[in-house]
Image (cartoon, rainbow, N blue to C red):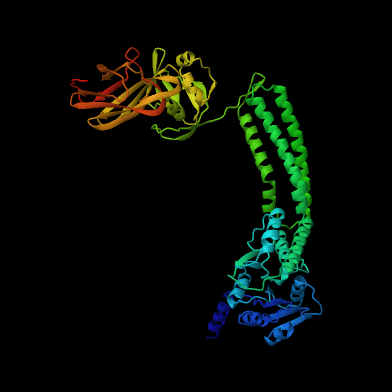
Length: 575
């Protein structure tokens, strides 16, 4: 039995119990200057907060009954013989407070509630932040909007609190040791800036609406001066003046240099009427300027970092340096494009940059994509066992109005169109005879806009496959888009083709079925063509729409407009 209890004791001793969270004491500091009407009410509200251990009212040289009212309400009072300013009062309270967490609350708040006080302190008690500052709805805020926010946005753009001068805040006492307390109204914004720069976590807490005494205009003038002085002092201390002034100038000059480099490269490769020497000179001058000022930016940035080695400057640095970063990225992208277009052969280095083409269709013609990025295409030879095949990227097919397995007639030869091979998204593979006829050489680069010129005059046969039929549309490639007519084909009252083409008025066009001539018609706008074949009825409806096309429809002397393949073989025609 004895051994049983010994084993149980060892087992219980081995069980790890969670260490109870250390109790954190809370002090509330209430700075007061001639606030006999409201200080007692504020103290009474704070006393209702269960986790508040200490209430200190710092009577900052009041000439009324502020001290007596505070003591009567149950607060401890520390009195300054003369008025020293809000910052001095806060510092006195912080120095005398004996608790782990300190909250600072103004003595003139008329509608303070325990929930508002709790909202300030709980995030720190829960370990979510080191400092909380409040925001609330109020009627004033002129100093904040007209002085504090503009200056903070200029010198400390990473600080984006709605109310940086809220006046009510709380903090862990150990982090306040790192803060420099201003003696006057600059204390609020000074704490916010110090916390941000030193990397102390600070959270803005919404405590709802508050009501307090409105300050007279002369007091607002004094407050604005003290806030401006504090922000400027901190900006100078933490190197933000250098960042905005000197570094800002160096960044602007660096961007000028980089822009000249980009202009020089652009002139060399894309502006033919500017002499090569001028483009090179512009680029070299820009490179010298850019290097000189970028080095200055780096040196000054290092100096500023040394001023605040533990600082939280990332967001400010990104915002200030962002234009320079974008310019450098743009230049690197441009250089990488040129490097990718470089070819070295037989001791000769050639750089032939080619850009992609952005295609935007403004009309309602039937296309898969209204906006596409196409080309350029590099010419290569056909592979050995594909002498009757042209391999064409999908973008090129879209430009020429064809698809895979359509055919193209070049000179006397007919080729089947196939998609580009895997890993060759922009390679145009042509058999030798086709390449020679089109005056192309291996390695030629064709812009998407030039593709129609290259294939001008070739005959394309585009197929439309349906359940009971296949329709072959034949057209001659035109070098430019011109006004065309849309048409729709109905088979037994069912639409099977919607397309467009360039028709010549009063010209005759042939229609075949199974490669045999069936009928022809004289083209007139908005006229319809109907014929029967076996048990099928075909109707072609022409519509005069505002569209363009490169499909020049062949007349009877040039070829066949349409060729139908039906399931039925017996035929009678009537037009």
